[in-house]
Length: 242
Image: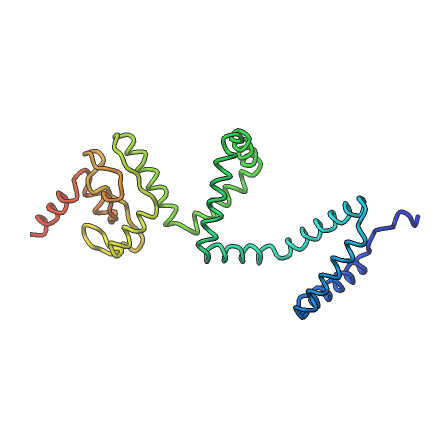
């Protein structure tokens, strides 16, 4: 009977050990640098004089892995927040991480493409509801970015239909809105983040799908303009005001 309970730690003993470990960890972190260096040297010397056998090494690896999992689970949010802060604050770190990711991707994606895509499909099938819920929530929290992405996709599709070149991105729309001081390109009314993206020279008349042919307009002006160019529409508005 006694042999069956060897190695099992009851909750009270586990809490006591956790408290003791925390005490020694705090003591080590606050230790004088000289004493800490001497302590580490003594530990390394002791370990060298008392090497572990294979079974002890395996048990130590399992213990350390479990401790790492438990510690990370408790501090996951703080650790990730600190990593994000470092990533955004250090441009050299960002460049290094991106370069490493790009290198790994270029070296491994061609040979792992099918495996990668199959993994994505399997994950999506198993987590479809979770994924759609997260996407819907993100879209509600970021309506402007969501709308800008939809506009870019629709414009790219129409440009392909008309056989014209060019493509723009969500950042281009944000820049246009800022450059226009949040006002309609045609009537100068305040848009208040409710606007449509207009091709000043329509795609149907050979206008490009590049950012330099775009503007932000209110719904009324964009619908009234129809297939006229920006100059033609402004001329019409000027005539109507006379």
